[in-house]
Image (cartoon, rainbow, N blue to C red):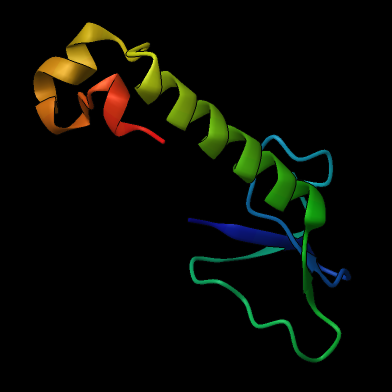
Length: 84
């Protein structure tokens, strides 16, 4: 996963759908940055990733994944009753 922040910024982003995702004049790293020294992780990115993960869980519960995914990865086919 890539993390980006503006060259002169202190907020690290990792969700490309975030309104603050830097497109130019940025620093990038592939490991999760530390949050000391005034640097922070983006709250909007966190919210977006959590929402996406929640939708993926719902898709698994409702068997809404495309059939080609389920054919290639049968372990993803989880009985509805098994999902909390």
